[in-house]
Length: 390
Ligand SMILES: Cc1ncc(COP(=O)(O)O)c(C=O)c1O
Image 1: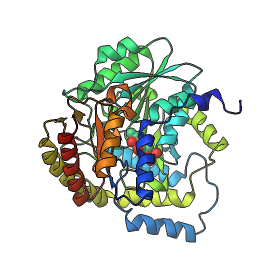
Image 2: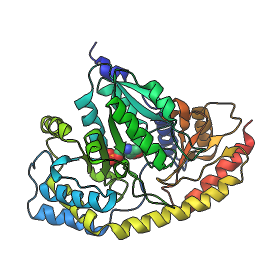
Image 3: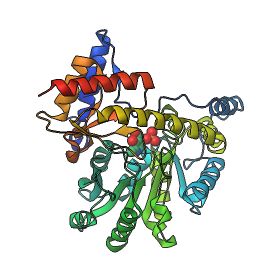
């Protein structure tokens, strides 16, 4: 057998079934409204593009230190102080192509065969694959959308075994748009301290919030707790730079060397001209973020009102990120069948809840990273379809 057990253990996500069907329909000439997209539909700010061109012209085209250029790590440390109010040594910051590699490299650094990592369900679809890829075993805990607190600490405690190495948390959450309450975060910190497990806090949506600012777990942490916390963040969502592949991790001392060794032996480094552009994003990007979030908020509010029209949707108003994750009441089919039917009949693509783990079934994920016009049209079709299905 040519293929490894690792690669065979990876499951193709349910979302790809819908996506490949959408592509097939598009190829045959059908117009599709895209609600499945997980990236801002805004263009990257011109100042950031110019900074990349300047760096290229200056000749910043060679390998850099694998950990990332010091100038960018220093600027990120300032951002961490400004935004998360933590004092981070630039030596604890590692630059990667997006935030996702930090997740993988940290998991590769901590997991031995079969060791366990707790992950949210519903939750980001890559977590379980990355854990398996690193040789570990995913163990789901549930995220609630209908209450003030998102977790049940007793449930999490009951799932921790001697083999548990880490817990992944993600606020604002993809797909629920839920933010953590202070009680949630304090509970998680206590569990991690008690059981000596690592917290991997995925905060890539931390700047896309509506009524209130993001509350990072680092704000609840004592200085010693930082030895147990990894923060994952990046430029993709915050500055509409998904294709640039630029992100970072704030790592405890013990993880810096292992992660940098993995970078040295795999991707070498992030292109320097991309890193220099990142400095300009951090310095000059605040207005851009404000305008983008204001546009997302207008769309969220309009579509939320529209979705209220259907008595088949139990819809929760997201506090962050750019997704609705409604439950479809009295659904007599799987969420994959539902999304495929909607695509076939009305050309509206969205992701089935089952793509987000076992607790996602019965839901759909609707991204509002699309024009208001398309969103309104798509929401009308969805409501129509909900009236038609049994
Ligand atoms: C929750 C979450 N984490 C991490 C990522 C990865 O983002 P990137 O690698 O582009 O920074 C995504 C992208 O969709 C996400 O939704």
